[in-house]
Length: 170
Image 1 (spheres, rainbow, N blue to C red):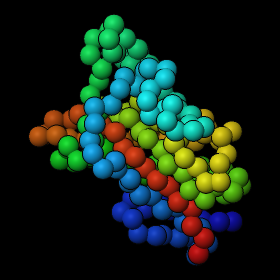
Image 2: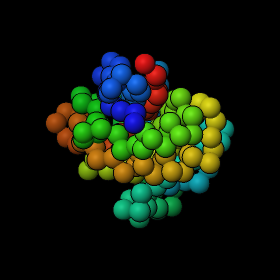
Image 3: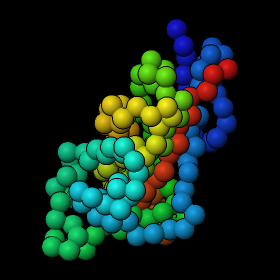
Image 4: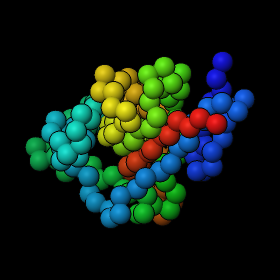
């Protein structure tokens, strides 16, 4: 049986010397105000080919109505704008065995995190090799991750995380 471990600090870890999941945070070069995460055709989703996203059921009501008709869009702070970024506790919820069975070597996911630490929307932006049929399942798993919210000037704020997960073989 293969062993797995997550490493959020960028160092490669393997269990039993076989496989490791390396987690890197890939942040955009310039911060931006993100569009309403409840919008069907956001610029991020249409720009990413074959991307799939999941909005958690707990947060659908809070996301619906945000925007032009239901008030201002929610502001998701980029990691460059917060004192402490949102982090998983303890690790990202992801079925590593499923990734191995399907030959996935890497994936990139955008996670919108509420000020309460809930993953509100998770979008698989890229996967190598491409496996669009897995996007929904992976997004659902990542959205199940427990997180600590980002902190800005001592206050919990909504934020965005860009996570790259690499499956490495030792």
